[in-house]
Length: 302
Image (cartoon, rainbow, N blue to C red; front, side):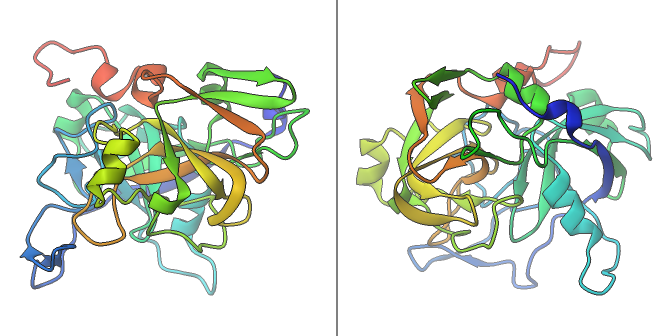
């Protein structure tokens, strides 16, 4: 497929490995009304990576591998962290530029709204050397990416090199895209109503067990490429009959009502110009050779 990739700007954005943060009480109120204390967002997560299950962890909203945030103060209405979150795209190269892991290369795997983190996958060697506060530079490229002859298919949050590696085929004026699961818009929760989908995510609610069984969502994985039916993300996240959105699962399941595994948007069409094709291997870990599919280093945990 022809794209405008050669005309896209590659720009540096930067953040620091963020610390996990919790309310002083430590408690989260789950959907059953029971207070629980669990690991959550932020930090360096050593044993949860793209390719692993998104559900079943003793956790809430945990982000795989490394969470990055720009802590620079706001200047008026502008924010360096907003630039980091909007311009970074899934598949972008990230490089550690300070600390013991300096020089280590990683890959952006998603963006988490609310906490406004960019998520980056590194190998085990880098994880063991990284520390909270280390600086990570992302070569941001992909914002404004378009596929020629498919103007109404909006592409966002996607590195052009990852687009080239995905299973996408033109079929009678539409794009057929490999996905691991198809999710009805009725199951989408937190994140709906945002004014754009160029950063952050929105959550798949998995608290209704009959729906989880009906749509086969119990085995959903971090990094899965998924389709959301009747969902239009062209100008923010909304319900639209006949629309279709494709995204990547970026964080773990949650205990809080209205939440669940988060999805960062990569394609959307308001009138069904995208055809999802089921492929159990549709996951960025396998496509990019990262997460659980990184080559195992001697003595490594992958």
